[in-house]
Amino acid sequence: MRLRPFRPDDLQTLYEIDQSCFIPGISYTHKELAAFIAHNHSQTWIVEDGDRIVGFLIANTEPRKILHIVTIDVLKAWRRRRVGTLLMEAAEDWARGRGLKMIGLETAQDNLGAQKFYASRGYRQVDEIPGYYANGTTAWVMVKELE
Image (tube, rainbow, N blue to C red; front, side, top):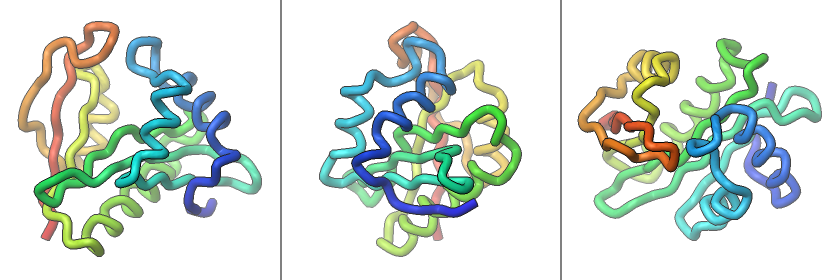
């Protein structure tokens, strides 16, 4: 497995992965995904195995020295094989290298696997947002303070 930056020809594959990882109403449209990636303060990391993309993470910097993780997507067959860890380490290291103070993200209230993964990395639940996702699902806001 290797970590690399986003390339424009990755977009369709990332869209397909996002659609496979999340149900409608939580997954992003092609247009939304493209906008998140193209944002001026956005970074996107890709994990490949050979020539196949198996996961990705999109994050953007926000005021007050915060990195916001927009999405982290890992193909089902590749979960629990360190893909998510590689992506989170890349984002966290990048944030530290820029002097950011905190990382935040939202995760569906019923996505217990993701919540457990983030908690194991030092993220804590700080808030909930009822109806956050287009399908009405509540989101947990989780944050990690950086040294």
